[in-house]
Image (cartoon, rainbow, N blue to C red; front, side, top):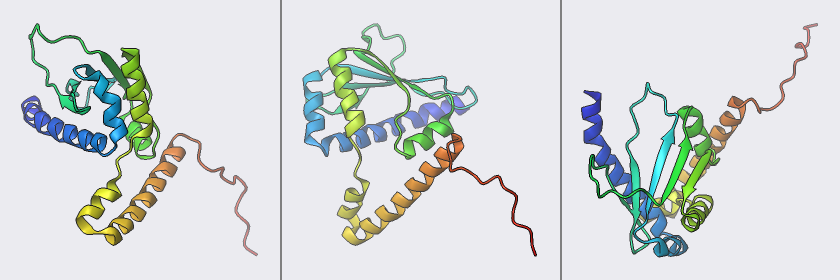
Length: 184
C-alpha cells in the first residue's frame, strides 16, 4: 500500500520540486547561462545508503532545456531509448536527520560526481553559488516589512539549527566540568 501511495505522490512532488529548482535558476541569469551550453544533457541524482526503513527515493533524472532550465524525466521501466545520464551526482544519505540539519545550517553534503567534466564544473558552481532568496519572494506577496520580519525569524532559526548541528557532531562549546559552588 505504501508503494502505491508513493507512486501517486512522487510525480506531483517531483513536478513541484522541478518548478522550485527552475524558479531559483531563472532568478539568476548567470545560472541559466551556465546551463544553456549543456542543453539536452541529462543529470542523475542518486541518494546513496538511504535507510531501508524509509520509503525509497525515486530516480531523479533531469534534462537540461535550451533555456538553461531543468525538466524532470520520470523513470520509464524497460525503455531501451533511455540513454545513460551525462552526469551522475551521488549524495551520501546514511543519516537523513544529520543531512537535513547540515543542509539547513548551510553545509553542503558529501557529494560524489562522475561524468562530463564541463557539466560537473558548472553544476558544482551552481551548488556553491546559487541560493534561493525566499525573503525576496515573500516581499512580492506581503511587502517589504513582513518579509523582513520573517527573514529575521528565519535567520534566528537557521542559527539555532546550526548550533544544534554543531553540538550534535560533538563540536559544541566547551562545558565546565568543575563542581557547582557549594552553598554557604
